[in-house]
Image (cartoon, rainbow, N blue to C red; front, side, top):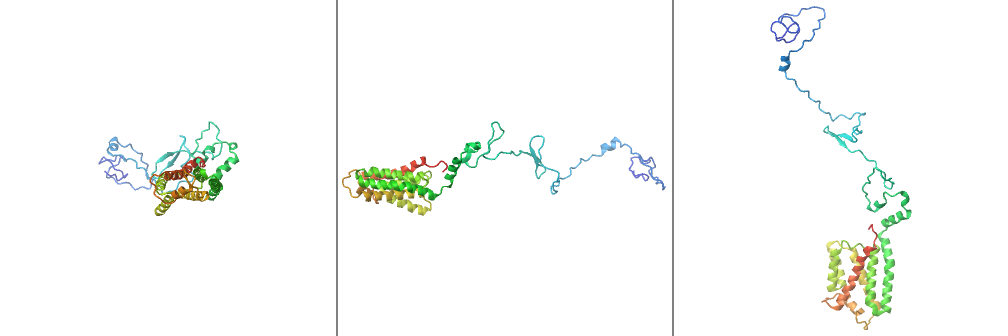
Length: 314
């Protein structure tokens, strides 16, 4: 029941439980301040009858800027860093590791794990003391990185031309050793071209080498060279190393034939037979054909052996 005197609700219909006044009595109009009413304890029945609502958490406002004095990346006592995600979750992250720059000497026993090197060529000198790296060592390393293709061909021709000149003079003055001089000169020519880096490596040209050797065995080196050149133009992809090797091979054999002249006394392999095997022909397992194929193989063998003399970082 509503009490007109104090304005509270009372369970008793006749006397107010709060102000002990009759329920229907009207409050007296006086100028004095109303006396304060001492709160009375709520009966257990009333508290049990009314369910207590759980407090609702206030929503997280992510649109507000972070206060200036709050650092969400500051270190915590557990040894790591924490960061707050957009959903309000607190996550632990690893603390940044301050690593010394490359070339700094790290004393033994220091808690430092070396980072993976980007340049594998400098991995061996990263943790050495500064006194262990000689200036000439760094000069040599940078020299291999800055060598251009023109410098490589300059070195190649400086060694290749004297070899071919000695071969031409040898077959002219010692015609009986025509075959062996030709084999040695072509082998060394291919070896020099590969060792100086004028031509690329043979690692990715095994299939092309096999095809050129098979065609050259049956139809001669000119057909093998021309066929590979036409096939490369059609595919728009060819090995420049094979083209240069075959060009030097054909040109050197032609110079040897011209220098030796006509020699009927050489029975094993004379210049006339070499000229016949150099031109397009059909070889059906003849002796001159096998010898000519062996000469072609000596060129490719020199190219393969050149990998032992190439720089390590190429």
